[in-house]
Amino acid sequence: MNKIAPIILFAFNRPDALKNIIQSLLQNEEAKDSDLYIFVDGPRPNKFGEEEKVKDVQEFVKSIEGFKSLFYTFSKENKGLGNSVITGVNQIINQYGRAIVLEDDLVLAKNFLSYMNQGLDRYEKEVKVFSICGYTNKVKIPHEYEYDSYFCTRSSSWGWGTWADRWNSVDWELRDWKRYSKMARAFNKWGGSDCFKLLRSVKDGQGNSWAIRFCFSQFLQDKLSLFPTVSKVKNDGFDGQGTNCKKWSRFKYEFDFSKDKLFNFPSSISLNIQLYKSAMRYHSILIRLYSRVMYLIYNMI
Image (cartoon, rainbow, N blue to C red; front, side, top):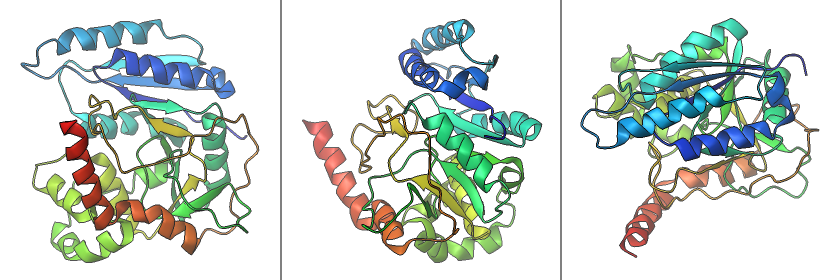
């Protein structure tokens, strides 16, 4: 492993969730050699009890041990997740040339950091690769497939890493919207039926997703993301408290409980069509409609 990437972790008002992800990080051998940067967003105005929860998060952050170094920033105002991620990663990634980025509703496998750092090493000079993702949906792996990771189009925001040059290439302001607005069909075909709707919501000021802007720049540049065949991440945010997660999800995964640290990465940076179709079905309009119905049913029970 050439160098250990810094870990950038975004937290808000969930002290128990933050404790869970820190505990899972510390079970990774590489944690002791990793610089950890934590950004805690400020409480929202007029949200009863939230200020105390944010203070509990801040107090826990101050007590964290077990990493090479710990740096933290507590925002006085509520920036929202999108702005927090963009400004936070901007502050750190150019110092190191790469970074691993996490949110507080995730739980990580014991080989998460090993996988992420090896992936960042392996594909740093491969400009076709836009990001390394720790989460994967449950995919159907071809019998003859020899690798334990695969390439796909749409990046995942649930435990991921990238390099400074890729991050700095993103048009966060969507400046060329006149041209971008003509790409709805192509963007949806590339990344899923909800892609352009999410992008437009950012442009219209109704949403603030950093992730869809990151994916759109990936689409514009025709680049791929690396995913493990077995997920190194699970999302704990489906308890209804996470910023962007619900209680029921269409996303199904197989979590890696192993301690394997030797990874067989693909030598060819290209799509395996069978794996690609298996992964992308989660973003199809039929699966999204089914998910919406199931979510409504689940919340009536």
